[in-house]
Amino acid sequence: MDTAVLSALAEPNRLNIVELLREGPLTVGRITDRLELRQPQVSQHLRVLLDAGIVDMQAAANRRIYRLRLEPFKELDDWLDSYRQMWNERYDRLDAHLQDLMQQNNEHEDKG
Image 1 (tube, rainbow, N blue to C red):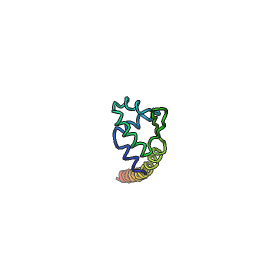
Image 2: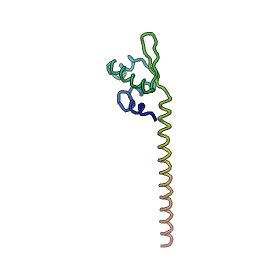
Image 3: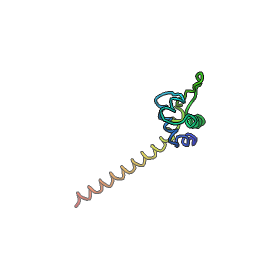
Image 4: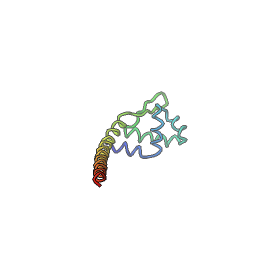
């Protein structure tokens, strides 16, 4: 897992930009308007997202259009999936243990 992606997403304004871009590509001006931030702030955050590989930028005349890249989110999902698998295995073991305890309790009650 690339820690640059996690670091970039840890900042609330950058996460808000990513959330906006989930709806589709946007210009810097549109992001600025939607988040009510100053253009230099948005440009700085977009630079971090671009450097982390989270967004792509396409120049169209004097506008810059940003869109999300899928690859970093796929990598993040794969990384999280290893934790999901670990927790599912632990929950399965806990469930088996609780089932054993219930069965032992029922057997004890049947004898008593």
